[in-house]
Image 1 (tube, helix red, strand yellow):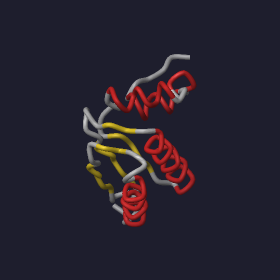
Image 2: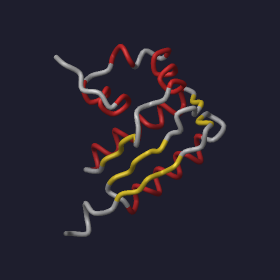
Image 3: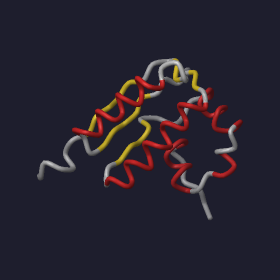
Length: 109
């Protein structure tokens, strides 16, 4: 197996995912991408989030796609993260890729 493609990292995130710690989360994700091709974010089922967290993850998804890397959630978004996605209008605008990423669901055409 080649060196690329074999490295992946699970990142356990804190239970509070907000503007107060978004810089730390960004740094953790950025550093992980420097030495890993795939990143799995472990978000606790009861984790509290705000819109800054969703924006960070969406930016990381775009970066990963443009860089030939992958990012995924280890499990579907919990109820609190899902509420943020709903309030911000993300859920109603989900395409197949978004639904798979955030909810681990396939969306039928």
